[in-house]
Structure formats: structure tokens, C-alpha cells
Image: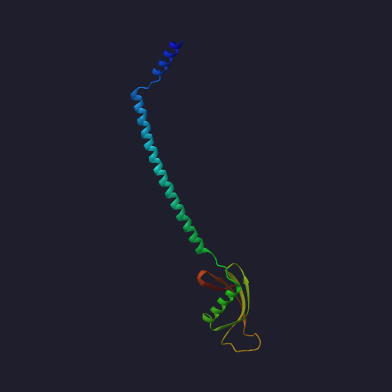
Length: 150
């Protein structure tokens, strides 16, 4: 029985052998696939790095754009200061009183006031005053627009 087991084991070992040519082809194919896979990994890593860089640049651009377009919050006091500046510099011929201010947005106001020309005679009543409605919008950097509204 030992002899039969020994013969059977030798037969199995001999029959399991692979021809040397086939083995070398398999090894060559394995090596070429390894090289190809390493090349793909390098390309993939480069693409991932490029995508991360582009994503960071896009995020920085969006943040910069958001900051540029951000609307500042302006107080009513600041709006009145801008109105006073505008009348003292741009509308020197006009006088105003009875200012009422209403907020429309974070940086936009509707202003109602009584206005008259400086050249009009002084009287105790409001005969020469007329009602004027304005829209004041204050932007970043103390830039503003003051337009008439009906």
C-alpha cells in the first residue's frame, strides 16, 4: 500500500508541472501588466492632484467673488451721514428738513424729505418746500447712489 501511495504521489507531482515556455509567458504577461498598472496609477494620481488643484482654485475664485458681491449692512445713522454729505457737496443749492428713512434692504433705503432751494426767500411756513422721495444705496467702499423715486 505504501508503494502505491508513493507511486500515486510521484505521478501527481509529475503531472502538475508546467512547461517552462508557458511559465515564462505567464511571468512576462504578469510583469507587463504590473508596469501598465503602475503607469495607470501614476496617471490617476496626477489626475487626482490636478482635480484637487482645480477644485481649490475654483473654491478660491468663488470665495473672492462672494466677498466682492457681498452686500454690507448699513445703519440708518450711516445713511443719514451719506445724505448729509451728498447735500453738502453735490446739492449745495438745496436745503432739506424733516427726513424720514425706511430700510428696503441691508444697504438700501427709501428717504422722504422736504426740500427747497437756498435761493428761495425765508418764510416761517413751508411754502417753498416741496416733498422729495429718494432711494439711497450704499455699496462697499463708501460708494453710493442717490436717485429720485416717485
